[in-house]
Length: 403
Image (cartoon, rainbow, N blue to C red):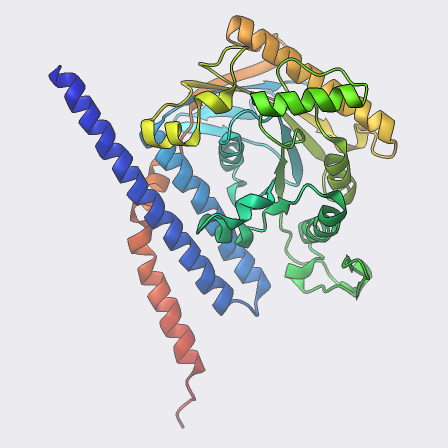
């Protein structure tokens, strides 16, 4: 009985501590972003460099808190044919999983729970790409207090789900991502030469005499558009019936328009699409992950999946039929059928049932380095020192010189 009481007290203390750490960490990151935007508004390269550091710091903050209140193990299985064996491994010195995933890639995945993107962003961190992540999200998330402003500074892509509106915004953002990744974008001094009546910026790459620094990206999106639930399954089945499509058993039908548009816009810089399938322990085939692993349950009650199962393969962009709508839909539906079959096997056996002669598998904790944890815990205090120094030097430079 005493052990139970002590354990409950411990859980309460850890939960309260994690809330304090998150609020302080998120607030300090946003304040830091405001200062960066103010002092480096005339130097886009430096501004982007420091904003990317805050982007990395945010996922470090989230994973640190998750490892405190709701720790999970992650088993990553990769296809040997498309991802060289040994590209994802457990680094014993660092005490964490490390990946050699490529930059300038589009990442697609099935969507089960609200924290799917956290695990994908963590995978980018394992690949040393945490500061280069861009995520496509619902427009409503832009208005979240504190976090919404931070995500805007990260240039996350917010979608209205009205294609005529989204197309303009998406075109401009993806053009910038593509140009910056090739060193000929806004960050490196190039500017649009025209703005159409629709609001689309047009660029002239020939204006750039010499490419500047390249700014890689990892664009994460969920083609299903929403996570799997009883409500979304019902809408999915209605959509399938209306369009003469057969619904899947464990995933929603993917929408083709947005993904195809993204791939076409990024084709000059993007070489690979990472196809990822995610499954979580503790969920049966007749249950929905979002009902079991709710945000409140994860962060306040510590109810997390003990094991996160990830399967990843790389698909060359040149092998994807982007110019034919019907062929692209057939390709994407085949990708999703493969996911559905993996999920069906997982629910029956507890794993994806993949041939380990053709695939590589590694298991490790979802966590960041010890030094990163220490820096996250001290960041709200430590940031005051460089911020004060930065503020002092900038203000001093504005003072008139003495003669």
